Length: 373
Image 1: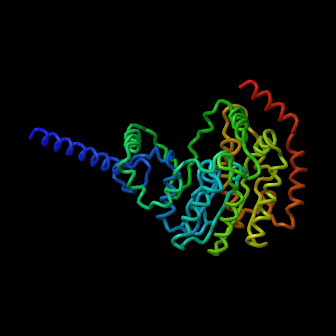
Image 2 (image 1 turned 45 degrees about the vertical axis):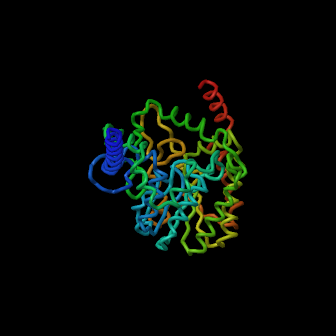
């Protein structure tokens, strides 16, 4: 009799605990995936689960325009811009690979509302050490009830507690997937040192030949599949090479080879032409001009267009979108690429590089900085 009573009480305690965790996780909603609006607090753990969050939101929003890419795109392109057909959603993710971006596109076409794809390409999307950052990444798309399973997750319970304890008042991600700039560059003691630190690691140990280092699978195959989906669904595709600071391309040369960067651009243009034809919209904003060569301020002054060497601000992303929307007539900002002009364009980039960069001196600076780290 006592044993039955003990078992019953233990069962009730366990049941109550499970129910409490579920209700608590739903109420706090640390990843902002239940949209319950019960507590007006900032979801400080949303960034940690952003791949999950964006998979859920892409599935649920019935979007007409999707932005794909890496963290550069998350900072740079607000889906509210008038260039995008609404509703638009920024599904770009930090360190996103072509494989990961492909899965977001696959999810977005399932409800047949998608009309436009805005793809911001990064060399490391094709040459990543990992094909995917999360081992069970595919489950985010195959299991439509996954977000409710998280209600009973102990890890989410801990994140809920952490969310309540945090006093941050910065809403990093908007509901349209755009990441607000939350790094205060004005508080940096030395912007130059900060950028150099970024350059000294960004392309270190980066693989080449369009293979993911861990699986040896081809990222170009993923890109080709993305293009096939665009063609089958009759989507409007705009591909851009984003306007990172010109020092980042010297970092690539330092660890890899500048010619690989040029070859990659040509391979993208030719592959896109092979699958979608010559009317494809491909623009190169990663060229040498007054924007990508913004002067690095001395001390703690804030840069107008850049957060660091590879992340540009919404202010520069807006110029890109204004240009594409014919609202900003700055010819030096970009070049539209085709199979007919790609070779001349790459030759001009090589010539412009020598005008803007003292290559030998940059390598000396990098050598000294890395040796002193």
